[in-house]
Length: 415
Image 1 (cartoon, one colour):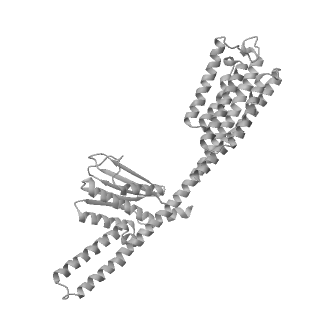
Image 2 (image 1 turned 120 degrees about the vertical axis):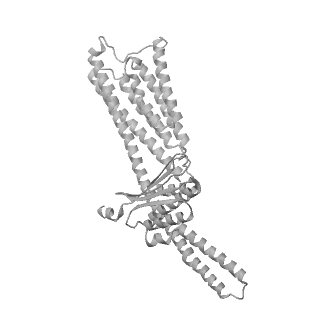
Image 3 (image 1 turned 90 degrees about the vertical axis):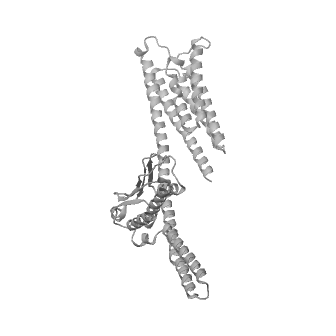
């Protein structure tokens, strides 16, 4: 199930963060040992055992994280780890000089991890606790309610103290920014892996959409052929049989039946043409658009201007989609636009086919795309990696533009 897969990925990612924490704290502990060796600070100094305690904290929480079976419980265990972490950090900061030194820096990784991996509310909770605990520590020391402890005695100005400067450089700069760079790279790797997986899924979806669109167009072509040829011929044969029955059926009744059959034949051919006109299979998209424009002009007062800059044949799914889009756009213009002129253009770029339908009608709010037909066209276009844009303002007409990806035979040969 997708939910189980997503939870497994989340748990694996959280466990990787625990391992990253161990590595960063291991680096920090190594740096602390160097500082202690150079400055001759006692091994009981919190500069050494602070990251060590922090490091040991990861083991029981890794055990708990591995045993969670739901996303909610996993997030709360992870949040509990962060809360325990910042409480310990606050105590260690107190032992390491409070606000006197760089204690505020040591919350950095906790805040980064919490806001990266936890839900928004829990991320804010951890950040708020960091601010509250550090502020409380500083204010309690300031008020004299708890004693102030120094990390090491400085008998001169800090910038003149080799011990202070070495500790700040190694523990503060190297010990913080080396793990920070690792953390950032770890997050970058997570994003890169997710992006690669997303691109692969998008490519698979695009290929699937193209196959579905191809199957839909093939089915439309088959149904249109059945309606136009088989059902149309059957109705024509019935009409001939009725003609042979002249004299056995009253003339008025025979005439009414023949008119009904003629109407059925006309409706059948119109339906077949709306699904996929035979001209589209025989001559291609350009001539089919010309014929569509003629039919629209014959049916009403619209004047159609066509600019077809495409000589080659396209795959049947592309031709069917673009024809359906033009047909649906004209149907909406006839029903709603109150337009007098429509311009239809079909052009080819180096990697796509662009269809534009523009009218001089009353326009509409483009945020409310009219009709289910155009919304369906947009979904079909976007499903194969194309785009559809609609620009319109009340009283200023409407322009619909579709762009579908198409490399063409020549471009494919160069790949």
